[in-house]
Length: 331
Image (cartoon, rainbow, N blue to C red; front, side, top):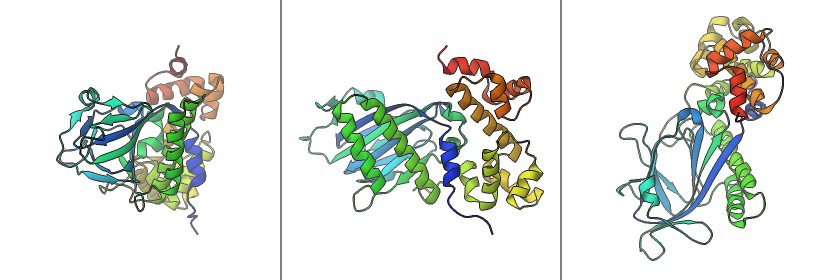
């Protein structure tokens, strides 16, 4: 019988391979009318943005395609824009949208650093929104981040955020206004938790995208299939093993042809290509985080030859492993 428990261990394994590099957090009190347009981030930079509506409502639209739908967010809702895509946020569907740079010239700040627009006496409907941007080290190569849908939405209940979001949000607000020692580090860790919780929600809630989008081919889709998940789990458990398609098919209890076709459909690439990419991602993490010799990192990636490892790494990442390590260290 196929194993059908949630793939929490695999999620934990893959989450260990990325780390938060930076975070920016803003609390905003906005009085209508208002509209803000955000330019796209570089895809390989692995920037993600999020919005938490704590009071009132707003409308979000991804500008990745013409005539994209407007998505209403109300109090308690959380929206994650996974890849830093161009988007706009506004108080109503008809409000004029201004580029972020132009809009910033018109805002003020209160003594706690809250962004104010319109002010309490403007007469327009008000919304309080917590917004943030996070960037992950080497995230552009991470198979989990690459497989996320453009937009993930966690809906609140009865105008309140779900329990895990409510607690994290309260902690964020407290830390951001406390100015206590190490607050920036605490805030970054809390943003990390927000992101991880959103991924956990997505794994168990396929309808987390209001516009009907499903995760693109990739890791999230693959591990929802119990047969393919066994093969992916085997790769993650022993990335240096000399896997063949036949061996991975046996792990999945499928014929070679059925396994190869289903894996490619769900993951978006053939099994051995994913194996290579996962190995190079793990190697990149080791290059950034450890001082291990190059030969040891090559061995952990399944290569007896340092030269063969270096050639594959450069083909996958774009630069040689030594150069990658020096850049990661800021040298």
